[in-house]
Image (tube, rainbow, N blue to C red; front, side):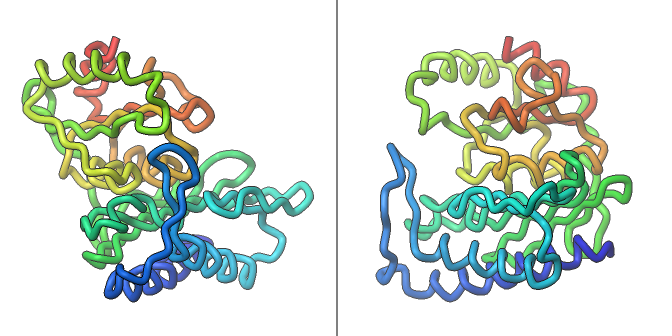
Length: 258
């Protein structure tokens, strides 16, 4: 395992331990609203602080972009860590067991390593560019699904951008009438990891941030899948929208979304 990925795994597991301990007493959670339908707890902050401490202990000169902390620059650092300490906070608050830690490492603006850790199930998804994607110690590939009509498709509601709801409902109708089924679990990073390991065949969502997508997108690419914005182009991390699928389903997904 690459030293950077090894540090990311250690950091994710440390954050996961914090999350698991807090899950035993959800009544003690202090919930704050960051915006409409967007929440944060002391667990998000504690998990992110633990990750940042682990990263800067090993790599003090690396920059960080965290969901809760924001940007911690280190001059013209070649490496940047993109962190979501608890993707699926609303699920976590309600005890719905679909949330994760997501950590990506970029080198000169390109994602090089990624970790998605599900602390509730103790499932660790990892990927390094050019070295494949793994679930624990087992290499994973996207499914062999070749037809949209047979695909299980994941999605996420644009709950932070209600203005886009009409567009999303049109997209949802188009996808529902052309695939085998649609699932909305509420943690985009984990959904992307599920596409990478073949549990779902495709995924799309709007209104995301880079920390929701960076690690999972790399996993899908390293597992043999395709990733782009809703037009199939690069730049999805900046645009905040993503479409991902098996190679043969990907163009069919884009066509349905059009």
